[in-house]
Image (cartoon, rainbow, N blue to C red; front, side, top):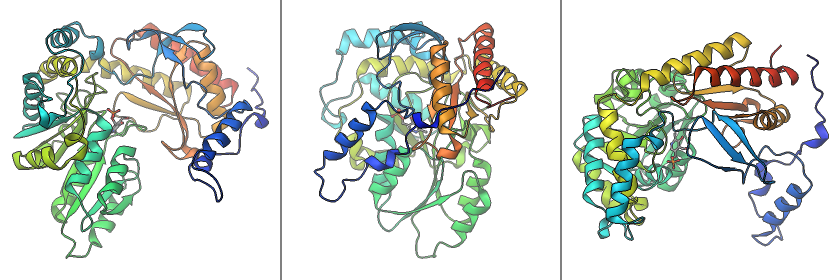
Length: 426
Ligand SMILES: Cc1ncc(COP(=O)(O)O)c(C=O)c1O
């Protein structure tokens, strides 16, 4: 097939960061007008799907409605509901029962009678899942990271981050006022170099890492991280948003994958991805959780999660506790997809989870390819700055347990056809 020649004029040189700051002499809203003027010219920014809606639950065969009103079917490879728990009948029944009993919103923050027995049961289940004394559930995953880090760390402390950590972790670090250090993604030599240079008087030390990295699908080397933490007297926080229920010999996540569950001080995770609901949590010892209930401002000052979500999540954790949520089927299908993509010649990084990056490395190609895939019935995520560096821009494929092998085959055929057209593969 002949390679398609991109018309570079269709792409803008103006970048995301050109619209962050108010320029000298501008009103604070002027940058919104500058952005609006640019978008009206029709140049491609990669965000063309913003405003597209899904017409159904998170499921493999989806209908989407484009901004212009056209509705068309896609195979869904862009959902974080990896285990299809957001549509699991028992989970939905749990949510419905709670909805009937408690209504659709809690009307109060957790410390002002915003929580029910269902919320408390959920915290107990999450604590047991990690073998911890207690856990705290936040109404948002983003808010969990921001609240936990900014509560526990302050200006005298130092936080050491993997460069690929989620934005909410970095936002929590900035809000905390602590000194922030960053090591290149999974570079353990660099991490040790940072740790070895921390002055002895700086005693408040926290290493934070994603468990499964959200844009790469690989797992943090927690065996080495926990060893280094012991050697240099650091605490360890793992955000296992994409690992819970998915990786580890019984689905307990990234720390279980490396056999170091007892070495993690703060087991953070999100209830919005594999668990299929909404919210975030931290499982830890009793005193830490008690402290967070009083000092994590995104908990103290934010309305509690709806009881229906808590009711659904209790059913989710009953399944996860027994490793009975379909993890093995999910991972078999992920391996199948990975092998197919590799045999087509794609660069898919080093995924160890249900997230598979497909490296494109050119924004103009990425934007065009993404549009073509969507129009031709395959929905994948488009990933570039600020989520990753532009030169590492990619498509992100997320496996769902209920995708059929036929749907996987068809998706790879379509992705390969257009990737060849744009010269991504031969
Ligand atoms: C690693 C990681 N942490 C935190 C979050 C935030 O979670 P939520 O979407 O539930 O707010 C995400 C979601 O994008 C994530 O990927």
